[in-house]
Amino acid sequence: DAKTTQPPSMDCAEGRAANLPCNHSTISGNEYVYWYRQIHSQGPQYIIHGLKNNETNEMASLIITEDRKSSTLILPHATLRDTAVYYCIVRRGSTGANNLFFGTGTRLTVIP
Amino acid sequence: DTGVSQDPRHKITKRGQNVTFRCDPISEHNRLYWYRQTLGQGPEFLTYFQNEAQLEKSRLLSDRFSAERPKGSFSTLEIQRTEQGDSAMYLCASSLGGRGETQYFGPGTRLLVL
Picture 1 (cartoon, each protein chain N blue to C red):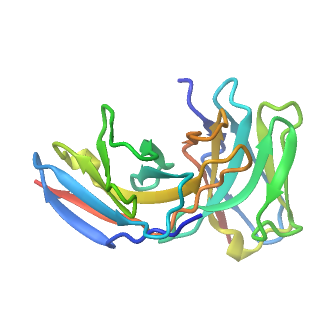
Picture 2 (cartoon, rainbow over the protein chains, first blue to last red):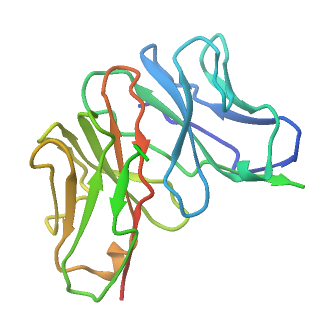
Picture 3 (tube, chains in turn cyan, blue):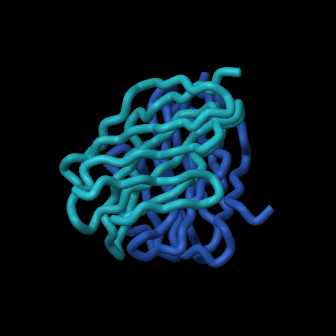
């Protein structure tokens, strides 16, 4: 699976959009981009994933560049409860085992 | 609640003791994964089941670790002769499989070995 690079930490003002970047320059054509987050002492929570097209759900939007070498997770109106570690993961789309490689993620702090 | 559940949520044990953790996946999810997470690190893959078959193991899974999923539903992870280095959060995830599968995680079991 391709490796990802994320900034170690970011701050965001409450109510503003949080834009979390992720670089995955070695991504291959059948690899998906996944985002999870982990609030302190809890299990990781799935946020969103995509292959080529931008995606949106009730939690966030995922913007993938045309060359697929980077992506951005957007939390449109950050709240204090969005403070967490956010993991960008690239994982091959196969029918076999698809274990996730988490890395160290980006620690997002939402500031009142 | 129909999410992934894990039991116990916390376990304190003395070095050398055996411990067993249980994971109940989301109903009808045929895939089950175990991960381990140490302080300040992201979760690391340990092992994977497709139904009752254990199909992949990480090199992190030493011979003191054993996992089972006897009927393709719940799973257990046993650690024999625990060591202080086994102290970690043990996470379970389940999925339906497929190319764009999504893994859903449980709350984890936090183990402290004294």
